[in-house]
Length: 112
Length: 111
Image (cartoon, rainbow over all chains, first blue to last red; front, side):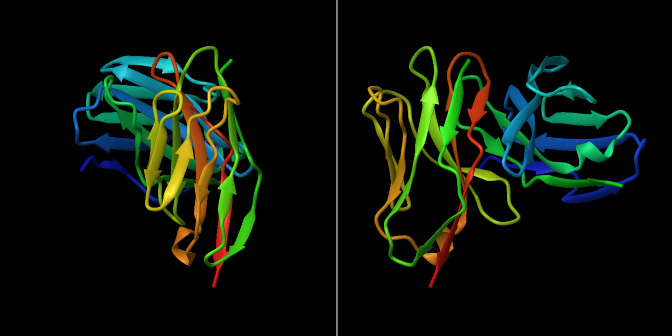
C-alpha cells in the first residue's frame, strides 16, 4: 500500500514564525502536491512538484514556498506565518501514469 | 478553466436511506472523474473513479456514472450506514498533473 506521511498532525505557531511542513511518500511517485483545506472552500492547490527540484505554482501560492530535494520528500514552507494561514494542510502524491492521488492524514495548523 | 461543482451540504440521512450527492464538471475535453471520501480526522482516500464516458465507478456500495451529455458524475448509494458519515469530494483530472476538487459535501447518517 502507498503510504504518505506528514510530519505533524497538529501544529501551533505564532505570527511571523517560519513554519516547515514535511511530507514523505514511500512509493517512488514523481508528482507531489500541497493543498490547504478550508470549510466551504474545499481543497485548493498551493504548489505541486513533478520531479526533484521542480515545482509549479498552484492556485494560491502567495505566502508559501516549497522544497523538493529528494524524490520522496516534499516540504511546504510558510516564510512568515500569518493568522490567515490557519488551516488544514494536505499532502498528496501520484505517479505520472497513475491517476489516483494518495493523501497524507493532514496537518492542522493554528497560527496565533 | 476546469472546475467541479458539487452539492452543498450538510446532508443528514437516516440509516438505510438512499443517498445522492450531485457533481457536475466543466472541462474542455474528457477528464477522468473521481470521488474521494474523508473520514473524521483523516486525509482523503479514493472512493471510486471513472476515466471515460458511460463508465461506472463503484466501491463499498457507492456508484457513480460518467455522463458526458450532462457533464455529471453523481454519487449514489442505495442504503447508507452510520459508518458512511464523512465528507465526500468530487474531483477531476484533465491535462497535466493537476486535480480539481469540489468544495466537499458533509454527510451524517443517524441510526
